[in-house]
Image 1 (tube, rainbow, N blue to C red):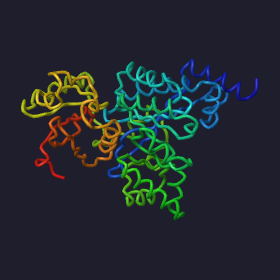
Image 2 (image 1 turned 90 degrees about the horizontal axis):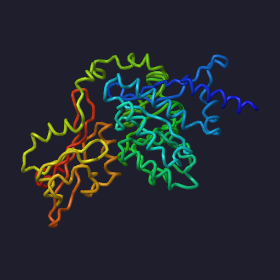
Image 3 (image 1 turned 90 degrees about the vertical axis):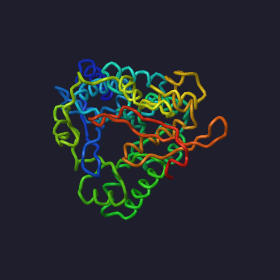
Image 4 (image 1 turned 120 degrees about the horizontal axis):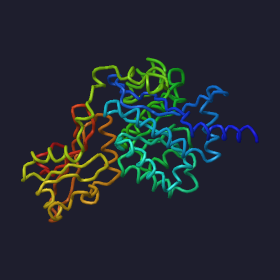
Length: 382
């Protein structure tokens, strides 16, 4: 048995006894420093080997078919831990190109989240472009299904591959993460500054959230703010840490609240209470974070030319001209805190109308979904 085989054997045993632990690195808003979410990273302490570097065991896990078990273990542990945190905090998980070729990946992720009652709208899947070159068919299907389930999709290490723009235009990404090598070189390398500024501008022009990785100094923060970058991750804000220390990152009164889980109510119940206040003459609906209509007014159903109540349970893009890609852009816009766009929508009789979409959140800033309303173009600015 060679060194890699022995490591794979020990890793399999460690997964069996729960020795692989999730560590959490904060992703913050550069506007106010508040933590918005965490990237979840695998850490392994072996009684004999000591701390085993992810750079060592992740490639071995990939080679010996252990990545699925590793991801499942990491997600389930992270979902349980995050159940005690504010409901506006998202979790980002790295998924390899090998795993994206698995048609069951989305089902497994949904089950892991469902078993812990963790909303998929708070799950961000981070992937790199390597491995997409030969065949995009199954990776695209997998990512589209995850997006339709409510996950956000991020391209990690953007700028390090030679086909980044190709994959960005082909696959349903909602967020891009600028590779740390460019961010760390900004202060002394003009070309790196120009690359980072260009990526920030590109992302925002496409309606994507942009995260700068590898931020280690206030000078880098100043540069990123000047470029309009809203989100960042790096040692300046915190190193990867076990779940027990996460409350330290969430100590700001503006970003953490004591939420009584017993007081939580389902999206459906919240939607029902919202729609109780809907004017019967308003063509308005409530959709969940995955884009599914949860409740709608009589006027909305009539505008959509469907029987009363038949809009419920359908994706909004099945009813309107709003595409899944445009809906992903809306979610990214919400994450960036930018004003929502207004969408033109033709009606059955050829008249012009507009879709006005607004996020709906509870007192703890948890995203419940979106209200979507038809308005006369003359009533909507822009």
